[in-house]
Image (cartoon, rainbow, N blue to C red; front, side, top):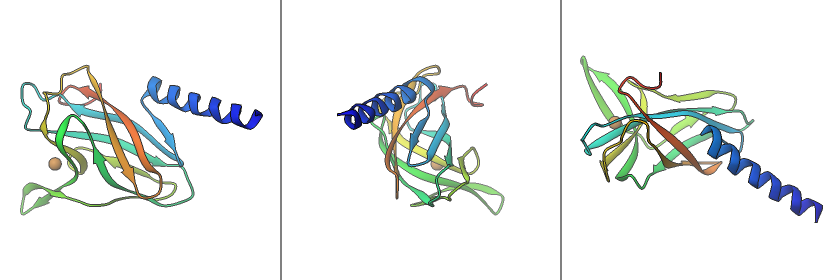
Length: 150
Ligand SMILES: [Cu+2]
């Protein structure tokens, strides 16, 4: 009975923690600072940036992303090829044990294609990240100005 109560309290605590500060603790992954620049009136696409701190002892990898806000969500990496910035789809982003993996402008990002509606500054929305080891982790994304969080 005591054991049940403890795990129930832990579950409640982790839900509350997610709701309050927008970060998630799962299998040693600390996900923070998730943001997406607002899109004005456009619904073509949007980028999402965030930080993944792997505080665990095991390597993990980001292998997918889902969101109800777009008809397609994927991992992208920006690269400069012959002086021109290009974006490529990537299947896997490594999240090594003890390291910080960062999705940031000009590098890795999450791309949402064909938004259900524009991303409005000040709003938030949910995405689900899929990790090889940790499984699904839900993240709350802040919609910011073009330059990101202030
Ligand atoms: Cu992209």
